[in-house]
Length: 129
Image (tube, rainbow, N blue to C red; front, side):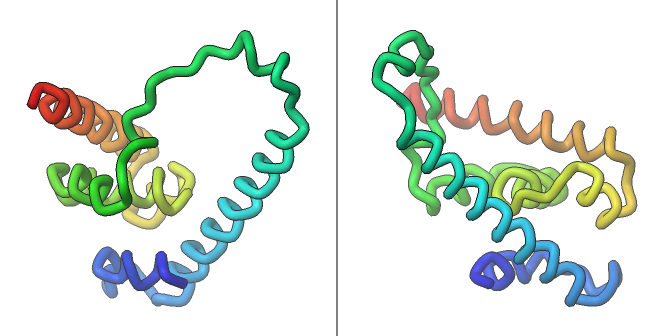
């Protein structure tokens, strides 16, 4: 429910009733919770020997607080930011985002790619300081 209140500003009355929009957010949050819970159980069963050969890529997002993530997202254009939040933070599928905004799936993928590109530059700029 917290995700609904955090993203209430993204709800557009012109696009339809609020219930399906809120339902989708709650559904995706529940699925994400269950997926994370399942992944945590799988990680408990891993042996240290199983992990020795796995590469450990440097992920800058891991070290960020939630306020920092939203600060980075604020540099994105409005539509790109909305699509990125719906996809990466709320767990919507590309086709669901496309249907919600009545745009093609290719356009949604372009916004995601553009968002990654802009965020990559912003993070490199931060590392330069």
